[in-house]
Image (cartoon, rainbow, N blue to C red; front, side, top):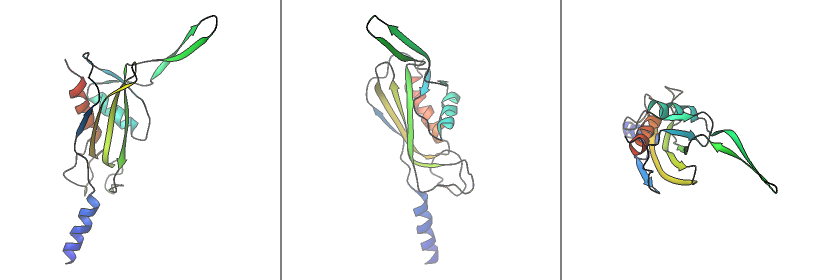
Amino acid sequence: MAKFLLLIVFLSLQGCSAPLKIDMVSEVPDKRIKSLVLLNDNKFSSLVRRSLIKNGFQVKALPSIFNVTHKSEKLDISFDKAEAQFGIRHGGRLSSNNPCYSNGNASHFTEYEFELVNMRTNNTIFFVSKGGWTAWCTGGPTTDTTDLFGDLSKELGKLILRP
């Protein structure tokens, strides 16, 4: 009976992770998308940036470095010129499996999502999401990925890094 209760407690701590999911909202542009900017910031942004770079993307450090001003007799219009045409908005839901006691750098997400946005049209192109660990966690669910951001970056690359 004690083993059964221990098993129930262990399984309840495992948490559930969402499988890979792709939601297409609009057509992927015909051109090959190589350069991106991150449109938001959270504590996982540096890991997301690294995984995108490792998977063949150029990730601009800032969304904009130039301010453009159009002057006329009646009105001056100022705006920031985008460094890349496409941006990634990213975020997710942490699961109850946190923290990982054997690896302080590992976080478990029930789901983490990348949203590809065309910054010229301000339209979402697609969402890619998945759950899992950001790094190896001894004692964590063995069926989950241990490179969540890498998996999402690879899937993003399959969709837009076409030759």
